[in-house]
Every structure is written in C-alpha cells, then in structure tokens.
Length: 176
Image (cartoon, rainbow, N blue to C red; front, side, top):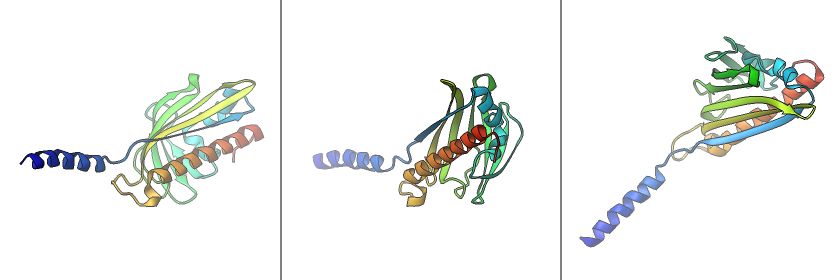
C-alpha cells in the first residue's frame, strides 16, 4: 500500500512534465540604415506597404495604418497571411501587430505578434523587428518542419530579409 502511494504521485508528475505543450519563442532582428528615422518611416510606416520593400512579399493589401487596421500579405511562395494592427504610433515610429489565421506555407508558426520600431542611431536609424510566436504544430511531438527551430529559422529569415530589403529601398531611394 505504501509503495503505491509513492508511485502514483511520481507517475502523475512524469505525465504532467511530458504534456507541457509548446513554449513561446522569440526572435529579434535589427539593422542600421543611413537615413533619418523620418525618411525610414516614410517607407516602412505604411502598414500595408510591406510589399514595396520586403523581397519575400509578392503583394500586400490593407485597410490603413491605424489601430484596428489590417493587411493581407501574399508571399512569393504562394502562402498568405492576414495581420491586424494592434498599436500604431507614428509619433514614435512604431507599430505592433498580430497574425489572424496561420498559413503554414507562408510561415511555419501557429500564431505570432510582432513589433516594428524605427529609432535614431547617430546620423541614421536603427530598425528593430521583434516577434513572439508558437511553432506550427503545437502538439507534443511536432514534425521537424513545424518545430520550434523551424519557426525560429523562418521568423528570423523573414525579419532579416525584410530589413535588408528596407535598407536597400531607403538607401537606394527606391522601393522594390
């Protein structure tokens, strides 16, 4: 009897440890651009304008750059995501948004929220893009292509590629 009283709590604890589910992942990318924050914001501040400077985006359409606005981003790989604007702060050169519904072809994540900020940096600007997300498969044993690592790799790549495209658009004086 005593042994069973010890074994039961241990078995329950082990089961709970295995069934914890996914943990939130975070990524952050930044770049320095040789232009004033106002010049960078003129290109990047239009929430639906991401298609003009992000190389992975085929097109983007939206309902405006204000709290509650939305955009649909169609990727060159065929995937599409709808995102909603949670906070738009043009005076601070910043906005925060979230994905509405996942499209694992676009990005292998089940949900995300992100913040995009432009700030002064010497004679230029620093642009930061930070995101928090969950992997594409939120089960306990996701396939490799929908794992935490796949999500981090995809989000880091999307942010990095976008920031390089923004830098080229601003410093080159033309959007893609």
